[in-house]
Image (cartoon, rainbow, N blue to C red; front, side, top):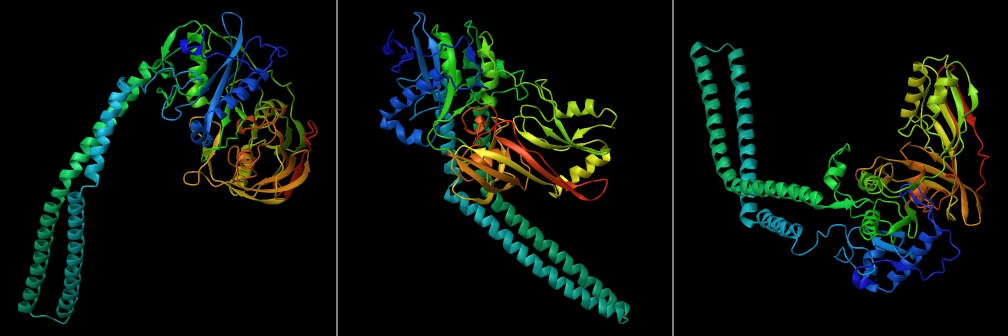
Length: 547
């Protein structure tokens, strides 16, 4: 086979004779990149360097992927893919083609896209039409003049009323009283006539602009209905296969999910492209990896050359179907450890959570601190964790042993009177010795639980930091979160606007895999709900040395 025959399998230039061949595929959502994937990624980047025409778009940032495969003749090679489009196309030499080519000039997508584009052009013409602007301005001017004139009339009427009321209070004769009543009725009638006259003029002007607004509304509705129909048609035509060559549309795959419909761009990520090509060309997948190329996009935290798990919003349901008949090697679970009790009384407990343990029960059935607390403190009313630590994070946690204590501690967290301190090791040499990180955060809707920086819609998040040690290209740092957003410390370390380096082991934000994420909750201080005194508790992280 060769590339002209639609063979996208690249044999390694690297000597891979000493590499172990995987016995089954790694989990695309939880993996340590195999050396074969790293070699394939390096060769893909070498190939990219030969094409300067791609450089501007790629350097702006794009997710790439490689899939090491075995051909039917037993040869080991790899496939490469890019997410979305590159340089205006979704099909370039060297990379696998799209699952469904919606950019084909004669395809229904392009035809309907041209119609929608014509609607947009017509909408732009109407929105910018000089006569429309003139009509809108004329109507607004009339409204402003009407408001001013009617306000002046109301003021004159009020002054006249005060004068009439004074005359009546001074003992007006019946004849004068009747005259005053006539003046009042006349003024009100004049006001009503003036108001009606202005309304007539305003309505006449409004009808001129309404002709434009009505046409604009019709075009917008048509554009919306065409766009929705096109998206549905696209998802119905967009069909992927599993290892048994059984096709299924995106609509069918996402129908049982909570969102029911696929997010825009589903199926255009690198991983689905790679597996679809492998399954439709009798190739056996051995290991897969996705890596970022170029700059980090606005709001996201990405590092050039770093490996990332497949996104969950678009790819989880899709890959679950595509790989349903493919054996997957799962990461071994960490040995189960129980929390260590640091302090305990009749109202609360302070425990040291081990890394790898959930804070509260999750979907996987893995052990959690809250479930452990319900067994350990069974005599209590209803033990509840007051705050959470990520599964990979270790350290101090608070457990309330009754409802009143829980509410009291929750209120302290809400008022930000609880002081917390963490220790972390970041994978780089931080320049500043101390400082403050202020990056508003919000969830990434297509890749939860990842968080994004968003100055417009993000929630405020503030962290103070202080460097405690530098060694071997890594930095130990104390982190004091002022706010308590999800993944706050992890994003604040990894983001370019923050420390600029991910925490060691934090693969979600671009670090190399490690035994665990090097983040530990080392100290907490709060007001004891029972005594009203400030108390503090500390925990040392002895299980892993990172520097």
